[in-house]
Image (cartoon, rainbow over all chains, first blue to last red; front, top):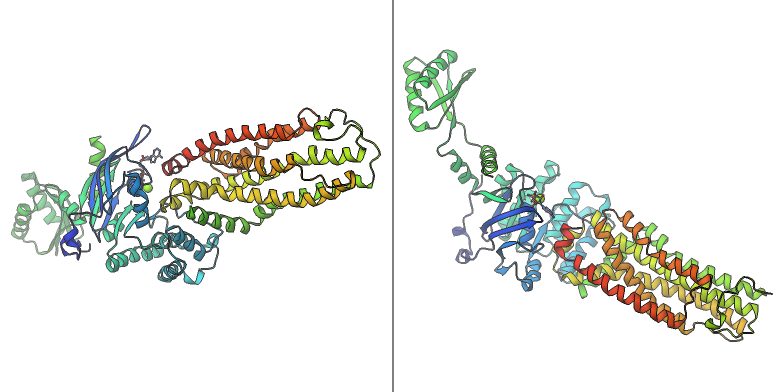
Length: 338
Length: 262
Ligand SMILES: Nc1ncnc2c1ncn2[C@@H]1O[C@H](COP(=O)(O)OP(=O)(O)O)[C@@H](O)[C@H]1O
Ligand SMILES: [Mg+2]
């Protein structure tokens, strides 16, 4: 996990009371389906904000609302200080945002340069600026050599890169990325991810990233909103999310001994029988594992008991709570709440 | 509206790169104009008599009672046979291109990036409809130009002076056809928004031609003859339908509708 680039170490920190993106109780209903229910969050300048959740959670709906493609059924939102529900500001918002859509949506009969030129033109860029921007992006993404090939001939990964270039052609201040790496091979996915980090670092752009990929969210995002069934079920940095779940819950511990592991495991089991706080004692090779909700108290007790029984302890580790566990548990909880 | 033309330019580029679309759609009007031209010059070799044309109200077509068979034949080709063909063909061109353009965007999911771009719903709609209207009109007028050459030769031979183009034809080409093409586009938008593949969009849109074919049959049997007065009435009817379809189409062509209902 990279350090959280908190608002206070940001050059624009004076402006941080004005989030770049804000959603206030955003709701969206399609017919009978409540796609989004009372979603609120703020994203600050230079931040990568993740919307993490399974398919159908409401991620795409959220970014489409913020990009003024849908009208919210309830709530409101702001992008770059402009109200997303105000008809007069929607075009100004669109001028200043870029959105990598779920599918690349390329015009197959154009080549890369023509395609980017077309979008640059729609964004009102002069010809020279369009050309310069297209060249910079295509070079950066490593597809400059293929610039005059018809897009129909491109591989899936290259198509996604062209879509990335389209998203950034007008150098937007706010960038929405809807599943930017889904369906890409690991190498292309890495290029896209690295590029996002580079943009963030160099240009202080603000991102909202939709993904169902935990590792991606953890690697890229400063803060993550876990979304399920149209609601935000948890919000924070990856560390905060982990901590939040770890507090008061079972932790898995691993006790590494030099020899007589089976015998010592019996000793631990005996201890577990007398204490409700230790459970699930297992032994495999030289490692004895157990779970406890109160590691602070139980670990010293176990160490003491094992040493008294003549055991040699090599190491005692607390298995880190993985974000995946957090994710799965929170998803599970929010489903039960419904 | 500048951005509408940015879209038009891109669409034209794409159409001319698709050999099938470019030749299959843009070429027929010219072939047709040529064919009718040759048919028209054929009677110049001497028509002796006309049979089975008693139903046709020659007076309404501006022929004197004592018209020669050659005059009758030339008039019939120009006013009865060729006339509706110059509606069917541009209408087909426009609606096929429009169906391809809308349903094609839908099928290839290219509309979302376009919706994200900073243009108004109206610019988006105009950009997407103008291309096919422009191409339909261009084909139609170019074919009309070619046909005019033949028709002037034919009418000069039959009447001693060129009687083409007459008012009816001018009204047809410059009032009626544009209105008709607009109808074709709006219809294609409506159809494309409801079906998922551009093949079915084309097929359904092609049904627009049916009423015109009916009219054509009506003309040759003498039931319906398009005088300029009748044409103005028809134009007014089409204009009303245009307005209604335009309302429906622009209502559908709002971003949220495009992304959710299409
Ligand atoms: N146009 C629509 N009509 C009806 N339901 C929709 C529409 N778009 C999205 N939904 C529903 O809203 C929910 C959220 O969808 P979406 O935002 O696409 O989720 P995600 O992007 O997280 O996969 C899903 O249950 C989906 O079925
Ligand atoms: Mg989605």
